[in-house]
Length: 299
Image (tube, rainbow, N blue to C red; front, side, top):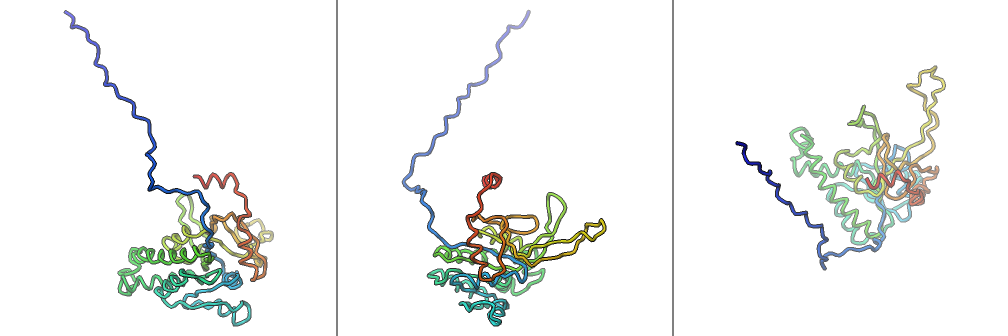
């Protein structure tokens, strides 16, 4: 005798999810489409030695320069009549710098405030952290061990950037000057290579400053390499020229740079210290955004 045939049970009916609805408007949410108030620029200028970093600040309109202890570039220029006499001061320690910046934030009388130079400013920050957190022990048992000191120092560095923000909110331009060195870049996509970077710690100080800045500019001299006399061996050439100043504003494998200011990727710099800052200001907004750059901005 055959067993009675029965239909297999039907799966339970699943009701469709309700259509997404926007939350009811709340009076606590206030959004605006008004243009933000004008504020000062925040610019990092890293450049090779002799390019004119300090002159760029000194010849700006109504500048002031805060120099890290041991930084003598501006004083040398002034002593030999190569820079105008502008308000300046030397900063001996990190607490003094923060106090100075907080006072300027309450009413800065200058059109531009320059810090010269970032490497020396970073040393002041690290000295405070090493003394306070590691009992002035710089070695592996203290500041340098597992990079503990560098990581702790970031919070102090952000205090400085916040104070500079408050000064920029009042309309003063911020110009941070930096020396450069050549570092090996560990490339996760291929062979490692050398590139120009600022001389501050790349993983902490430089990274935080780069995110904060409106523009990170790299100044150098245009390099011309003669390979004609190498006899078919183009591995190493002879440098010629190298007297024309140039400023790079966009990321490149060979150097750090960025800008949010619509500057062209490369700016020719006249051999006139008095024109350095005005050339930078004049280049803002002169570069139309390409389709490729629009794609990068939205990715």
